[in-house]
Structures are given as structure tokens and as C-alpha cells.
Amino acid sequence: MPNINLLPWREAERKQRQRDFGVASGGAVVAAIVVIMLTVFSFSQMISAQDQRNSKLKAEIEELEKKITKIDGLERQKERLLARMEIIDELQKSRPEIVHLFDEIVRQLPEGVYLTGMKQTGSRVEIRGVAQSSTRVSALMRQIDASKWLTDPEVERVETTQAGASRQSEFVVYLKQVRFGDDMEDEG
Image (tube, rainbow, N blue to C red; front, side, top):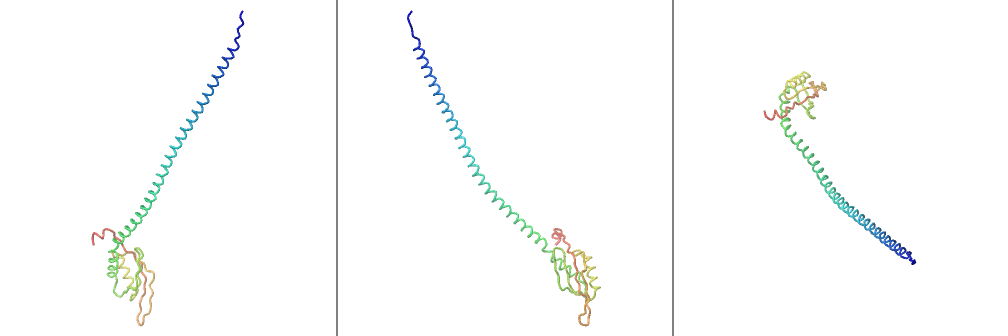
């Protein structure tokens, strides 16, 4: 029988398989590197796109914060203007009240009573004066109580003093001014 040596053929096939395995392994490594690089590239693209959106959002947020600050300033200015308008409106409404107050005090003042001072705080009025007698002060209080513009008379003090040959009573009376509001504007 002839002697056939199959070893070199097997050896050659083994070397061919090892080369094919090496090429396949190298191809797999190269493919893995390409996949990893593509993944890294796509993630970096997504991150940079998100960074751009974030920076755009930050810019818009800053712009909106400026607008909010401006709006807050305008609201404060609006509140101040409304408060001023309210004060002016209140002054306009109360303008005839002082005329009615002086007119009513003059009408209700009995003979022999003279005023030396008057002070108003809100609707409360303090009247200081001199009367010929304490009964004149009582008459003043009755007339104030009967008035439609004045109410709640209270005597703080009545002192009888000697002024030369005559005696007089110095007094301090508190009263309240009645505020009718818009009804009186229609009447007056």
C-alpha cells in the first residue's frame, strides 16, 4: 500500500481554520469597535442636542424671569395708582362734608356760646369753646344730638372760670360727624 501522508493536509486545514478564526475574531473586534464608536457618537450627538435644548430653555427662562420682574413692577405701580385714585375719590366724596360740618355747627351753636378751637380726626370732632354758663353747653349738646349731620356729643370737661366781673364756662365737647356718602351727592 502506498503510504499517504495526510498530516500536511490536516495541518494546512488547521492553519486555514486558525486563519479564518483569526480573521473572524479580528472582524468581530473591528465590528464591536465600530458598534461601540457608533453608539458613543450617537450618545454624544443626543447629549449635545439636549445641551442645546437646555441652553435654549435657560435663555427663555431668563427672558421670562425678566418679564415677570417687569410685570411685578407694573403690578406694584398699578396698586400704588389704585391707592392714589381711591384716596382722591374719597377726598372728592368728603369735600362737601366739611362745608356741612361748619354749616351745621354754626346752626346748632346756641346764643352765648363761642368756639375757640376745633379739631377733626376721621369722623370725630373736638370742639373747644367758652359759654356764658354751663346750661348753654347743655343746650349745645341737645342741639347737636338733634342734628342730622352731627351725633354722639360727649363732654370731656366744663370748667367755670372768672373773667373779670363775669363768670364763664370753658368746655371741651367731642362729637361725631355723620357721613351719608353718595346719597348726599345726589341731594346736594
